Length: 95
Image (cartoon, rainbow, N blue to C red; front, side, top):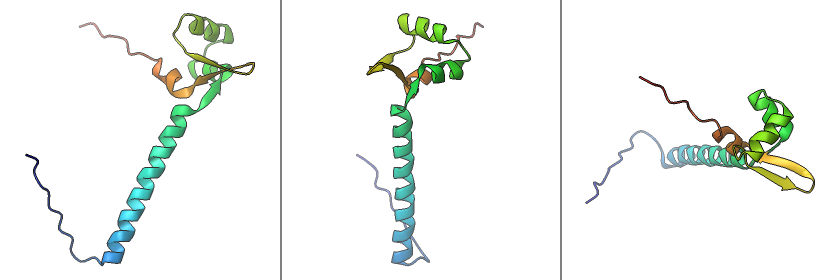
C-alpha cells in the first residue's frame, strides 16, 4: 500500500498559495520545453566539428563509422545536438 502524505499550509492566503503553485508549474513547464528544444535542435557539420575540435573530414569519417547519426534535409547534412553530445562515451578506468 502506498503511504499517504499530508501537507499542512499555514499563514498564507489561498490566492497567494495558488499564485505560488502557478509560478512553480510555469517554471517547470518552461524548463521541460527548453530541454525538448535542445533535444531536437539540429546543428551543422561545422557545429559538430567545433564542438569536438575536429575537422570536417573527421566528422564525415565518424558519420560513416556510425559514431554519429546524420540527417539529410534537402542537400544539407544535419545532426541532432542531443545525439552528438551522447556520442561522447566515458573511458573505463582501470584499477
